[in-house]
Each structure stands twice: as C-alpha cells, then as structure tokens.
Length: 387
Image 1 (cartoon, rainbow, N blue to C red):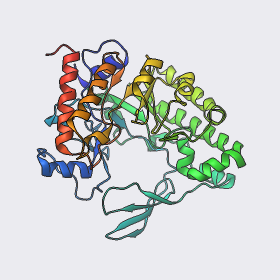
Image 2: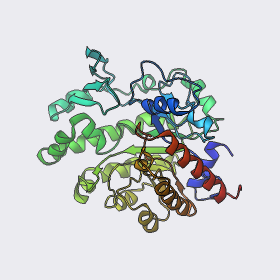
Image 3: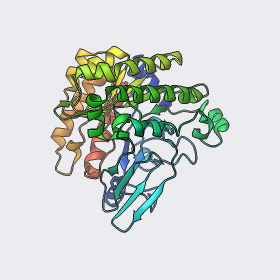
C-alpha cells in the first residue's frame, strides 16, 4: 500500500495491518547535526536556511512549493510520507519589508504586517515586536485589504497541480498555521491583546472570528472543489503544560459557533479527518472539541496521559504521542523501550499513528533517534503480521 492508502486505512479504523511509518519533520539544525553523526546525506540543506527552519517529513507537494521536504531520513529509515501540506495564504498580502539584517539577526515586516525578529545564531522561536491589530479600528482597517480574488492565493500552474494530485500516492492536508479560532486572533493581536479583547471588546473577537471563518470557507472551497484532501488541521495551541489558558465558557462563547460553522462546511466535502493541533495539557479541552465535530488530535504531548485519553475516547484519531525528550543525548534505551511498549498497545486499538511530537529538535541525538525509529518500524511490522 502507498502512504495515502495507509493513512486513510488506519484513520478509518479499517485495519492496523498497514500503519504508516512516518515523522512530522525535523529542524534544519537537526539534519546538519545528524550528518556529522552518520546520517547519509542525499541532499544538503540550503545555505540560506535558518537552523530552526522546518524540514517536513513528507514528499514535496509540487515543485516550487517553497517548503523544505525531507530527502535524507525518509529513504534511510524507509519511512512513509507524512501529510504533505497544501499551501494557503490568509494574509492581506502585504509586501514583506526588511528593516534590519545583520550577522546576528533579521528584523522585518511580513506579509501579515507583523514586525518580527529572527535570530541567526542557532534555532529559536521568532520574536514578534509589533502586532498589526490592537483594537476595533485596526481590525476594520486590516480587513479592508482583503478581497474575493482567490486565484491570486492559489499556487501557480494550479490546473496542472490539481491533475497531478488526482493520482498521488501520498496524503495531503489543508490547514495549520495560522488558522484557528483562538490562534488566528492571538497571531494578529498578540496573546495579551487577544485575551484582553475577550473582556474589553468581546464583540470585536466575535467579528474577527466570523470574518476569517467566512473568508476561509470561501477561499478553501476553491481548493476542495479541485483536490481530494485527506485531512484538515485547525491550529489552536491554547494550552500550556498545566492546562488550557481559556475557560470552558470562553471556548463556548468565542470558538464553538465558528467550529460548528466550519466543520459543517468540511462535512459537505466529506472530510472525515479533522484534526486540532494543540500543545500542552489538553484533557479539559478534548470534550469541547469532540462536541463540535473534531475527529482527531495532534500532538498528545508528554504532560497528557495518552492511554487515558484513548480509553475515554476510543474513536478519537491521534497523531504523534512519542516524547522527544527521551531521545535527547542523555536518554536511555530502557526509557525509549518503555515508551514504545505504550505506543504498541495504542496502535493495536486502531486510529493511531505514532511519531515524535512536532518537529524533531536539534537536541535529539542521531543514535537515539535511529534506535527509536528502527524499533518502532519493527513493532509496526509485527502488528501488521509482516514478521
């Protein structure tokens, strides 16, 4: 079976005979480190790629997609393609402008209007210095830059890409950064700005979410009319290690109506794999997502009890779940094996594809990763009766 068939079989709870062997992706710095430790390199990382740039664990969606795809780890460890990301652009299409660029950092205003600083000294999270929306006037001005000319938001050579994707052998997802019903607001207002507006001007937050829900539905219908998408991601990241930073009441007021509208739209296209991407401890949020029609979660980080979640929600689809900290240089084989035993029990129940949560960071050693991935591949083969 090809990667796409495996993905849809396991998440359709049809069989566990062909669980995909796959990884979400890696940092550029990770691949560079591993090359020095024995990973055979078929394609070097671009010289201008920053250390924290994501190298996706998938085949290229199409030439010129603008994203790095793994061409080194996948063939060496005989992995399946992860979900290739269909590109989309929710920005007002501002022209990117560099403010400062030196050997230490780059400061620029991006196509969303965010003023951002990126370090050139190692991998790190970009720092947003200024957000484009602070209040209602900013929002009204911001949305005035949008129109319904969606052709300019589709990839070049769109018709030919659609023809090629009809006969693909890998799964494709639509969605992710920055689209979500809390994340989009925080992305454009900042964490503090978004949270304060929920109290100071709740109608602004609702108008904001309604505008982008309507916009995305109309925009993505242009894609879904032409491409059979395997999975949709909704990005939230609305929890930390101790729990969510919004209440159940806030979720129901500011997010639930838009989830229901959006998922109803997806059902019209028979999308069955609707995943929320949320870090942190999410157990209190899961019933809220299930109630609005979400069918899967990514990732299940180590602060959660993944076995308890599977027991409480046996038909909830899960991607990820392996604690990357166990693969750091000081990680032990015994700890890796214990985690793999847990993965094996969960895979046997269906609807679960294990991999390292999010991108594999540069502090993961090549020897530990190779051990983990080889052992996990063997377990998948055993479950599928291939050995």
